[in-house]
Amino acid sequence: MISSDLRLLSRGAVGAAAGFGVAPGSSLPTLTGASVVALNESSAARFGLRPTPGQYTAKVTTANGTIKAARAQIAMMDVGGLIVRDVDAMVLPDEALSENLLGLSFLSKLKRFEYANGQMVLEQ
Image (cartoon, rainbow, N blue to C red):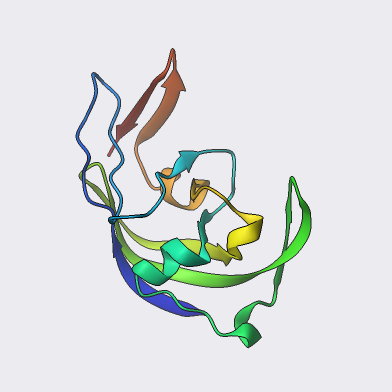
C-alpha cells in the first residue's frame, strides 16, 4: 500500500453544490457509486502516489473489464473545503480510467451527500 497527502484545491461552490478543484492538469473527480476513490496514474503521480508495477495486485471490474489496480491510502483529502482523513483509494492505469472517481471511501465519511437536479450537496 502506498500513502500520500492529497489536497484537491477548491474550485468554488455553485449554488448548493460543492465545487471540486484539482491540481493543475488533473481531471475533475466524478461522483459515482464506486466503493473507493479511484485515480488514474497521471493524476495520482501529481499527488505523489506512484505505485510500482508490483503494487498492482488488486483486481477491479470496470466498464472495460477486469484490470489490476494498486491500493493506496490518502492521508488527507480536501474537496471543496471538506477535509477527510485516511481515505482508501485505488490507482488504475491511465488507459483504464479516463476520469478520477470520488467514491464512497470519501463520501461515507461525510454527514450527508446527495446529487439531484444537477447539484451536488456535501455536508460534513
